[in-house]
Amino acid sequence: MIALILIFGGAYNGKLSFVKEKFNITEDDIYTINDELNSIDIDFTKSVINKFHKFIYKLSLKGIDATEYMIKNKELFKDKIIICDDISQGIVPLKKEDRMWRENTGKCLQYISKTSKTVYRVFCGIATVLKDE
Image 1 (cartoon, rainbow, N blue to C red):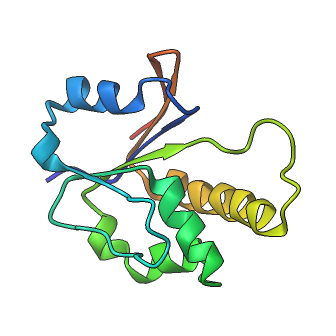
Image 2: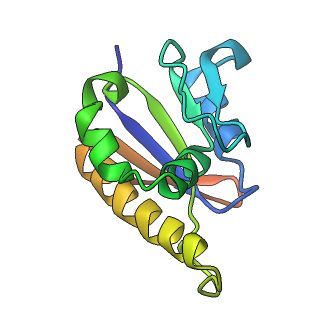
Image 3: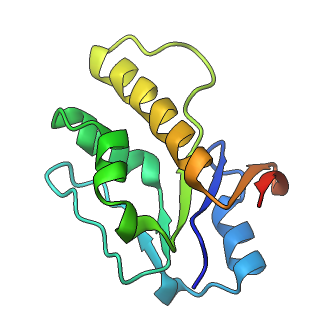
C-alpha cells in the first residue's frame, strides 16, 4: 500500500504519462473524473484518481467544501495517487462559480499537499519533487 501522493501541473503537461511510467500504472488502475456534472462519485477501487480538479468543480457547484470532503473521507484517499490540474495561474475567471472553483481547488490542494507523503509538480513532462517524506 502506498501513501497519498499528489501530482499537479498545468493542463497537457504530461502528468498522467509521468504517473504511468513512475509508478508502473496501467489504464485499469486509473479512475478519470468525467464531465457529467450530476455525478460526484469516485471509484475508490482504483489507485489513481485523474482530473481531480473536475471533481472539485462538481463539489463547488453543489456547495460542498472540497477540503471538508477530503477530511471526512481521508481513509478512502490515504493510498491514492491524485492527479490535478493547477488552475491557479492566468487571468482571474469572470464567472463567480469559476472563481469559487479556483479558490476551492487551491485550498484543497493545500490540504492534500500537507497530508501527502509525496508531491510532484509536472511541467513540460518534467517532474519536480516538492515534498518527499
